[in-house]
Length: 229
Ligand code: SF4
Image 1 (tube, rainbow, N blue to C red):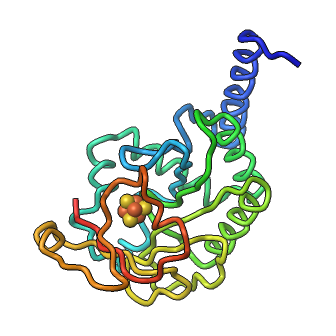
Image 2: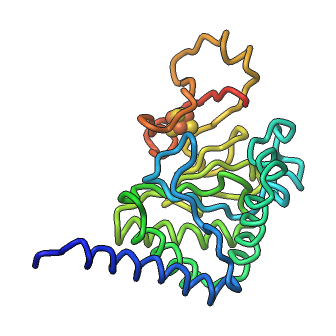
């Protein structure tokens, strides 16, 4: 069947409307963008889901985050009140919503994406709240892997949680020896990063995920060094 531009526009309108309808129902009419399509260093084919705000980051509260003073997400929340508001609205909702509701809102965003979604990135800001949330998101990651071939990856400082419960999430541990992490992803100060000679099993993050997918695959199990912002 031929699809003309009018019917494409109508389809687009219906799909966008679905996001609005769901947000009205689930998020008390929140009109912002619940899940972002990429950011300045992540391609638009990645759907970003923040489980908590940076302000209420559980790793920060527990003293597990070692880079709080240079946390980019925290900085952004202080500069951009709308970004902080969005993260706090989503944090509340993701704490209370059912897995089915979360999946249906994510599907509306995926169906309406500007380009096909290949990855889900958890926590550009924030971290996992508890072990139950790790299990819940493993189920969600499994669902999207099985139904659409979309893989899920994340970064975490929650060394007190066990990510062996989450085989469908590729976990980059921001601290050493996080159970179930694929590898360590370590932030180092700029001078240290610039002068670092890397050895076997080490990699220097180029700082732009357009063209690099090391963090989203489970293949590399060494250490990735990242330059602090
Ligand atoms: S190592 Fe590659 S995928 Fe990971 S954060 Fe750096 S640029 Fe992105």
